[in-house]
Length: 198
Image 1 (cartoon, helix red, strand yellow):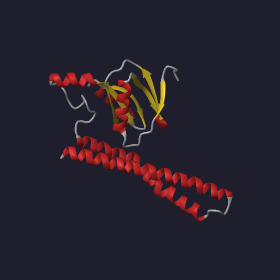
Image 2 (cartoon, helix red, strand yellow):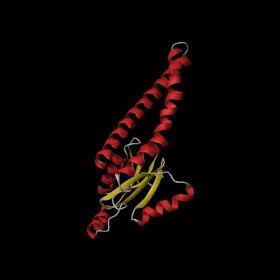
Image 3 (cartoon, one colour):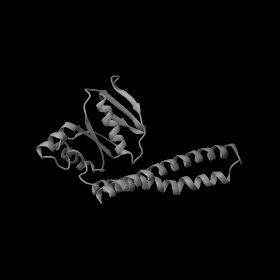
Image 4 (cartoon, helix red, strand yellow):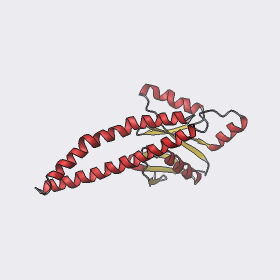
């Protein structure tokens, strides 16, 4: 990795994409633009001129043959494609572009938002739930809970049993924390988008 890049660690849940967008915008305002992000919340920033730049994340998994036209559509409206991670696409554009478009009366759905309305945002939330949250819930219910209960029942019978109990207890706690945090996030975003729509 390039030594000129600054590395930071941050963890955002599936439903924290707005917080992540704000975090990236603040970093760019402070003179560090996103170079790339990797799994487990490792962000790499490149030193740049401080500028107000809007970052947007889109969860809209594309077939490989459709990816180029998907990216091109947003680039045509001034969005710079950065990368994909975990089926989220990262885009950015200078906030000044939005202001100019608004002043000229040429602003459209792609200027300040990847999504033009709250209905589209609710649809994105549904895609995230089905593609990401549902598998977590299935694994938790079908694997983690049964294995934790078996280990709990066999506790103390052997050293291996005790180690397995600890392992499954930790995994159980992690899954519960993720499910609770994401569940609260889905509820918060759902209420926010529905209230704005009404």
